[in-house]
Length: 193
Image (cartoon, rainbow, N blue to C red; front, top):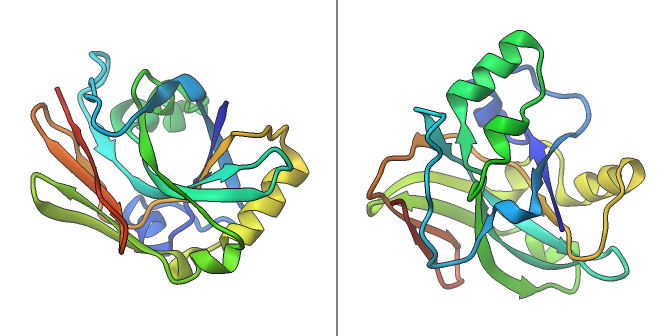
């Protein structure tokens, strides 16, 4: 399984990262083995001192490469490692695809992409809201992301697409209790430790 991730897909997040707004979708990969199921502990890597949370809507591809399910995911990012890679013009792999870097779950069936248009989602850390996002605020809609991804990359059934994070990223600390949810659906929980 591949985890395809859309970068800089919310204006406020691109601004907080002081990044140029992309003219077309930009993607990076996380290994499928990075996935952490709901309720499982999140372990922080020893090589980074600045892991940050990025909550996102996750979409799953069916055997016919249509999006058949939506859920919630957290793109954990080693921000210090990413900053160094960006400065040196190197790939982001180490900063994005370390073990346990993609807590995700809560998938539910969808019949059409239109069902996603009114979705909102949030991330709470130790009971405090850190991020809130709305699908309608994406720079590139799920439809555009999916079309672009399928036109350029070897997407396979069961692959996930993470659709980008809103503003409000925050640092992960040992002992944090994480709650990620799509409004109207049961929340998912993880603990860092």
